[in-house]
Length: 258
Image 1 (tube, rainbow, N blue to C red):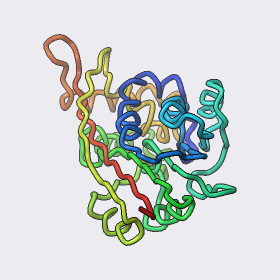
Image 2 (cartoon, rainbow, N blue to C red):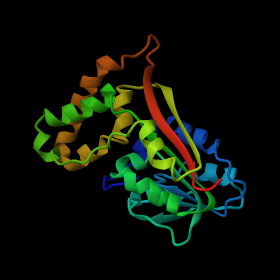
Image 3 (cartoon, helix red, strand yellow):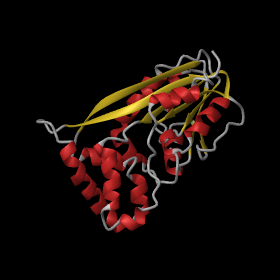
Image 4 (cartoon, rainbow, N blue to C red):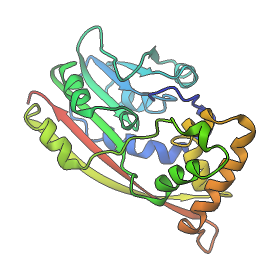
């Protein structure tokens, strides 16, 4: 993951199976015949590292992230890790697969970022990316509204939140001249969440974290309660108590050489 939030691996992995499914789906589409080095850029807690190792046996699999808390969790599974700002990371030598699951949406200037990542690939290499595309949903919109409307507003005014992910056509125009092979697709997952205010709990482990870090700790419970109240009508529980969270994600695979 990118940026400076104090990521909590336990909270993030509270919905570990749901967060992992897009990584499973993306890895299933990778067709590199025999990569030597695979990098998980923004690896977070490292839950995709074993999947990458299983998909590419014999490859060196390295997790790169800026969060020491997340890297400590990732390293505990026995994989090599590297602490680095993923916005400026460059490999010491070109790699065969750069994989990134739900991380690059935190970074600015994709017009420069994505071509630079392509340039880090060895011949025949693949860039594989998944990013949440939730910008127009109540869950994301009400984060900003809640942050601006409470006693915590001044303390979070300068928080850099998740940036809007452009539509697929933007990435097509950017990458098609650089990548003879380019795949783009969007999947909307319908997660079946349980427990009290599970949608708030989901985002508490991701895009709410920068707000929580910025405000005084005594304000955090009230902020979370206000956000939970705001989104509750948009995500009502079903008759059996399960709450459905529709979560849209943009995928791309780009190869600079066929």
